Length: 71
Image (cartoon, helix red, strand yellow):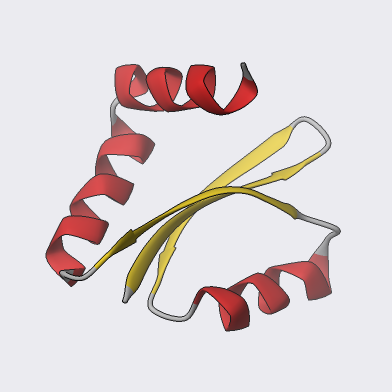
């Protein structure tokens, strides 16, 4: 599986991609007390990377997701 995930630490947000969500989350937690807010699972790597790129580079995609997860 491939994952796109959203982390939050205080007012800071992070969007990432990984194929091992548990391991990657542990790596993040070593640096800061990040909270896993949201993730999406994909079977196809290309789809996950495309979604991550859309969230990072297109404000409308990120605003729509953020509205859903903070409501």
